Length: 307
Image 1 (cartoon, rainbow, N blue to C red):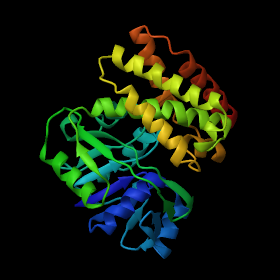
Image 2 (spheres, rainbow, N blue to C red):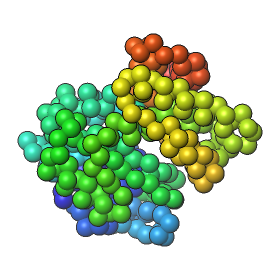
Image 3 (cartoon, helix red, strand yellow):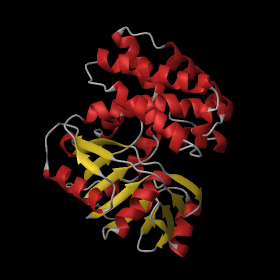
Image 4 (tube, rainbow, N blue to C red):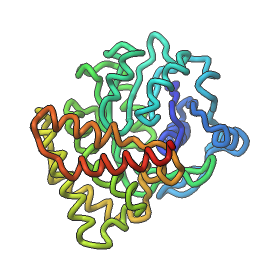
C-alpha cells in the first residue's frame, strides 16, 4: 500500500519503519525537522526484540510539503494537534484516502470527520509500546496488538486492506466490530498509567515500588470501567487489570508519552484521556474522584509549562 503517517513521533516512526520494512511505500509526515533530517541522511534505526536495524527506504516531509494523497493515512498526532495537522496537510486527503486514527483518548473520530467523510474514517487502538531516544532512533520491546474498525461500523474494503497491511508488518491487527470496548479499555489503561507517570515522573515499573502505586492505578481503572458501562460500552475490567499488572512488571523502564511530554515541556493529552472520562462521567452521573483529581493536577502541570 501507499501509506502516509501523520505524526512521526515514537509510535508513528515505529509503525512507519515496520510497514516500510514489509515492503509498503511509506511517507513520514511531521514538523520535527531534526528527526526528519536525520532520517533523510541516516535512515531510521528501529530496535525491537528482533534486533536493531536501519530502514532506509522512507520518504519524509513536513505537512505543507506533502504533494500526493496516499491510500491510507494513519494519524498519530497528539489529539490536541489533530485539527491543525489535518488542516496543514490537505494534500494527503485524496478522494479515496482512508484515514485511521490510532491516537490515544476519545474524540478523534469527530475531529477527523471534519475533513474526511465518516465512512472513510477508521478508529482503533494499539497496545504496542514505543520510545524515541534520539532523532531517527525508535525502539519497542514486548508484544502488542491493534484493533480497528470503520467509524460507521461497516466492514469496508479499506478496513480489510489496512488490517492486512498492518499484519504484514507483524503488528498483530484485528478488524474488530467491538473496537469501542477496546478503545475505552485503553483509555482506562492510559488514564491510570500515563497521568500517574506524568505527575510522579516515575517510569511504569516504578509505580509498583510501593503497594499504593498499584492500588491507585487499579482504582482509576475501576472508575473508567464504571463510566464506560454507564455509557453503554462493554468493558472487560479483569483484562485491563491484567494488562496494567503486566505493564508494571514487564515495561518497567517505559516512559509513557504523557511523561515524555512533561519532561520536554510540551502540553499533554490529559484532556482527551482523563478529561474525556470526567466529561462522560458527569453526563452519566458517575463519581470518578481519583480520575478527576489526576486531571486537575496534570492541568496544573500543563499550565506551569505555558506560563
